Every structure is written in structure tokens, then in C-alpha cells.
Length: 255
Image 1: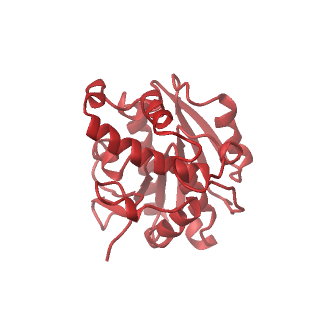
Image 2: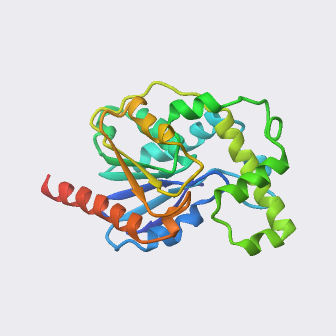
């Protein structure tokens, strides 16, 4: 059976990390970050379909289609205490999926970290809802976004075939963001942390503060040195995530 995630670590661990990647990214992009954590937990790195060459036909049609494809595996994964970590566009999926959990499973979500992400309200306000990818965006504009957000080494842009593939993937992923709509959800008892790079010029303070108006009652804002991909620019975020996993494990042991 095909699952929408990459599994890393100990399947018998008492705590799970559930992670969602950014637009244009993949589960594998977060392997170095996750593997820098201490052993003793399991990570499920969720992935949108259609990352590889020849898989364009597998991609989700729009945001709601992508949610449907992720939902069953996500619900199955929340069978023990967990920490959810979601970067950039991945935060919209995490917010929706956590908000739709039944109360007993929602109680197992110890913390949701939404990273380098504008709030659902802000994202919905920017959504143009085109009929298909590359209708309102062009390949040139998507390439400009790829350069603007960073995360790619300069030599990446010297390989036209690779660049073309990633422009295609990013363009289809941005279509998911462009078709995003907010939906009612319940977040009772789930703390949210909003993480961001202090030099990330792709987000405004209002984009980040708006998370407090999108369901979660308990929202903590935390800045880390770096830009949009601050996760790979230092150790501080990894140490902070390790603390959240340790706290979840300690609470599970004491229960």
C-alpha cells in the first residue's frame, strides 16, 4: 500500500514527528534536519504526489484534492503523542488536517509548529483560484519565486533541465496555494508555535501575527537567525524542535 509519507526512525517510539514540506520541496528535503535530531522518536515526512520526473499525472488538482489525499494517512499517524512541524505552504495542510481531527486524536497533538508561513487568513486573501497551474502565474514568475525564496545553491540554476523540472513542480504546488480556502476547524487544547527566519523578507509581521486569528487560542511566535530556509542555516531550530519532542515524550511517560 502506498503511503503519503517517508518514515524515519523507530516505529515503536512513544512520540511521532509529523512533518509537511514547502511548495516545490519534498519529504527528502527535510531528511538532514530530521536526522540531526537525537534518536528515540519516529518521523513521518508527508509528501505531495508528483515530485519526480514522469509523475505529473499524479499531482493533486487543487488544495482540497491534496487534503483528501493526505487525510487518511495523517489520521492514522495520530495514534500516539505527536508534534506537527510544517514549513511554508505545508503549514496550510497541517492547519487544516489538525483542525479536522476528532477530539480524542486532537488531544494527542502536543504542539503544532508552523514555520515560515503566512496565516490561513492571509493565504486565503491572496488566493486567485485559477482553473489550472500557470494560468495566472507564468513559468518566468515561478522561476523568479524559486530564486527569491532561496534554498537553492547558485550552481543549481546552471542546469536548465533540472531548473525546468523544479519550475514545473513549484508551479503546480503554488496552484494548491492559489486554490486555498479557509475552513472551520477545532483547535481546542492544541498549542501552536509560529517560527520564522528573522531575515525572511517574503513574510510580513501581519502574515505571522495573523495565526492568532485562525483558530488556535495558544500561539507563540519565535524567530530564528536566517531567511526563509533558516532551518538549514543554523542549529537553533533543530534544538528547539528537539525540546518540543522531549517535552512530549516526558508527558507521555508521566501519563
